[in-house]
Length: 128
Image (tube, rainbow, N blue to C red; front, side, top):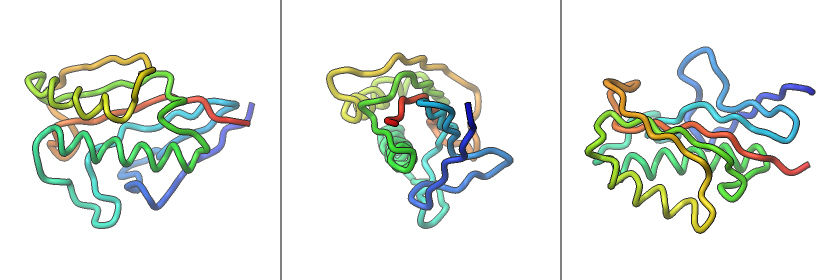
């Protein structure tokens, strides 16, 4: 199996020594995304719902660059700075995944990069 780096300017550039995503075989592994606006590089201001929407938009752009989509996502991990934001995050999350959502873990953490409310990573299948 070969390892291929996936990158797109439609999502925030990596802010450390990691790739936006790696494709191996028919799987793509997308690094944790935080609510950065890819055009400005700034954190999207707002509550956990607003930040979750931006994170999922970033993930969507990387999925598209990898030749995948939310319909092909197998597993996500959601990291929340405050578990009181779970309902807000969950309502936005549900809109992106439809009737057949992936497996998921949601973890409460004490702190996230740049003090954001939410970070999400995922694993998806890729055609071809």
